[in-house]
Length: 205
Image 1 (cartoon, rainbow, N blue to C red):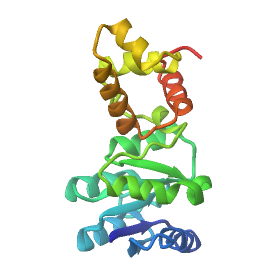
Image 2 (image 1 turned 30 degrees about the vertical axis):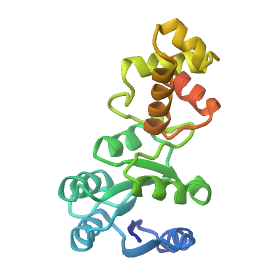
Image 3 (image 1 turned 45 degrees about the vertical axis):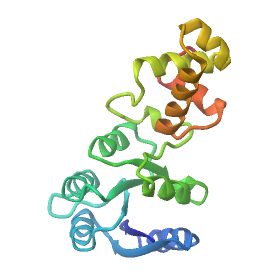
């Protein structure tokens, strides 16, 4: 079972999240919180596998969503924080990711993406929203220099065989790079890789 803490100041939102999450029988919502301080206290008490925190948790004794994320990440390294984002704010979501969140899901995409995000974090991987996550404040690219070259060539339409020839490396090495890129970004369709490459200025649109 994947144990989950939900933190949002609106009861109706928490109820909706609980309903979606428990569609998957391996998920168990073990606690709820309405502000950042309560989220920290319950996380420390219960040590959930995943904490789903709203991006705009109300301030409580100097603790907002960013500080709650930072403290949960610091105190409970095994608990993964997932941001439940009401706003498309690069500054806010970027700050939450830098504070230790492992990914984010927009509220408007909850029905489509939330269960996938929980499954991804439970497998100890970051969750990448297909088109937006890369632009939201990740402090460093997760890709190596060689992987950035490979994703650029993939985005430009080159086959693995052609990439191997251009880079003077084995075809098996190219396939390994491509597998690593998909795993790091959680992007498996070429169209999503192209969007990632454009948004991160690896290629020009």
